[in-house]
Length: 356
Image (cartoon, rainbow, N blue to C red):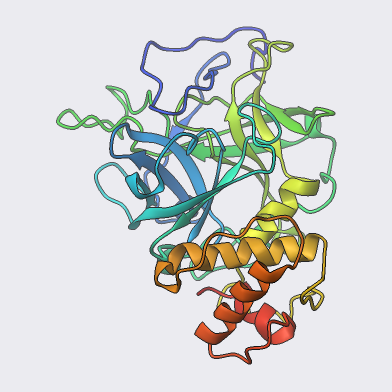
């Protein structure tokens, strides 16, 4: 068990946009991931901008959607940000520029609303898979992935959790991942395995895993049997301690409630495991209102972002199926060669839930 009351941070620069406080608690227990093509590390991405270079981390939750911390794309231009899957120093599995950013409703950095999704121009998740919403194993992944739905299997303090991402201060001289000819800081993936502390009333998961600038947006997960979800993502890493527990815990947005709904609306079913019909979604049409319409609007916005030739403006996600949502739904139906009626039932939902 770590000494929860001491910490140190080496004098390395914090990456670009990721200026959330890093936290090394006691001895640094982060380990370099030497094979980023292995699961789940191949689903974890390195983010960089043309001006700042490597600057944050994220997780593929679809072929074109990456879950990350909201402060990572804040103030950036989508076309000037690149996402590298399975980055391993100077190599990577696939890369794409961003087409758009989607921020959490009422986004604010270093709070429970510090999360976002990057929409990619290219479907890089098709190469090695992505972190699925429901339990699923891609080829070569013997454990599988899923997103937490409901309560934790134990009290937070009884859980050991993983976090993996791209820190600004590693690799350093003497490590196997270090290169004497290239500065690979922020370009090599590191994993930390340690104890969770608690879930705060505001919806923050705290843990003593070591982190550093550049790791914001990293997934936090527990490993279970596939029948129990496999690698279950619990949180999105956002910052160091909150002041009340100085030197004691790092922090992630705990996945529950509106966070879970946001992730669900940007996740995709694998082509080999398609949803049954509408995947549990109700049929909606002009005049419909509510969370199902919000998911529809989020999904249509993904298609709008990657199909600029359609000439459709991004929808306001307000849960109101008005004329603009109707026009976008009809345009999507036409592009996908579906019945064009503006009614989003099983056929249209099925197509919206699968990669496009």
